[in-house]
Length: 166
Image 1 (cartoon, rainbow, N blue to C red):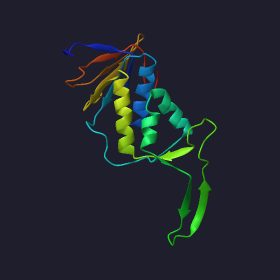
Image 2 (cartoon, rainbow, N blue to C red):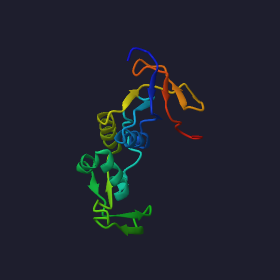
Image 3 (spheres, one colour):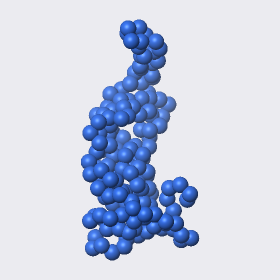
Image 4 (cartoon, rainbow, N blue to C red):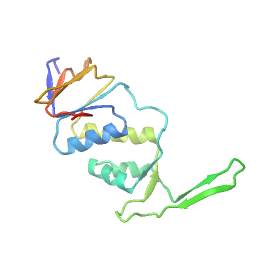
């Protein structure tokens, strides 16, 4: 991009799992999406470890469920232990949900996020790691989101309002 203003349908601020899923769903529906993320790399430590069959259906729609499952471990149950290792509570999980997907799987979040990001980029979203939204405003015709970065250049004007107050 040469530094001129660019118009997007949707601006997503944050490229964690929720932002990536939102960007992926919008891109799969033909919307022109820009994703702004202050960090340049996926956070290296896990903060989430499990996804259920409903989440897997969403990943299927985005196009990465099979790749996520390839690196996942089936969750067949969980036990909560006391400090002296006595069972406080146990629960079993059926292997398959009525949706046909595993009811629950464990994953490694940095790998999970990397797959999501690759999928979103492949779907045509413009991703801007190392970018921060510095200003946003709303008008009667849409919203404007501005960020200083070399790629993509800001400001951008999404044609529809995004975020709270839309």
